[in-house]
Length: 330
Image (cartoon, rainbow, N blue to C red; front, side, top):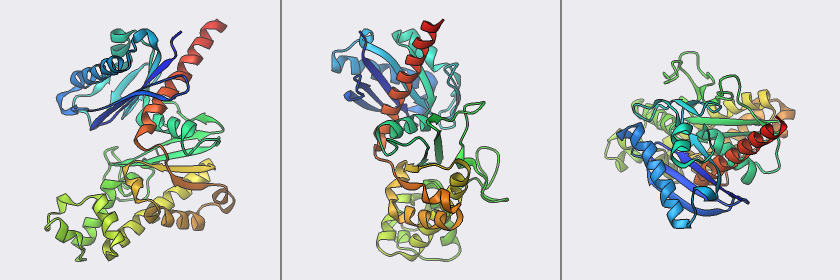
């Protein structure tokens, strides 16, 4: 009987893939470059090649695999298995990922948004274990999010529920790719924090980072800001605290709206840790509803880069089990 599950986390830079046993322990794991610039067909072939390589390494075959889950960035229709649009993938529009994979491997395949599969991973095997009301935010190039309410992952009518990163924070703020402006993710993200830092430099403030990049502002990164923070750089500390305050105001709204037990902060920028989160917690303590805030803790994600892979596998397993159950009922 097939008892293994494949989980794939498709990113703009890397494809992370793994085969898991029935306890969701890793059997084999692969990490390859996406090469998104080469177009959708190339990316799909990269994923297929990665799956074949995992079969070869593990001595498993298609017949050993129960189902496959994939986290895909951007807009999608999980029920149709259709990836509608992904902004960081040139030419990626209306790609029927499920058909591509099932026609090649004959394995039942399920897709969901990349942040939601991260949510499944952290909820089932990471910081969210034991909680029925969970919010996950991922801080990277942008701000992604997913929500569990009363034990159910929220999807909404168009599978786009819980877009916390597009919560409007400023009436006339920084333009956003969504078409609006002043969105939370334009300020609280690696790119957002760097932009805030550059604005401070434009106002005449001086930082050690200017020496590190030899005045080339295009080389400034969020990690540099964290490193400069640790050295007591005044501008870096002000920018980190300002970013934390903005996130704190955003999460105050989230706490008031969803009443979560835990807010999990993941993504590359979460490496800032308490440099960022201490200010976030101070802000929510002042601005969220007191009862709701006291019932909610804010902490870093546990699984790091593995959350997407294991979450995709968990998601696929649950969808596949439900599909089988519905067939039996019919």
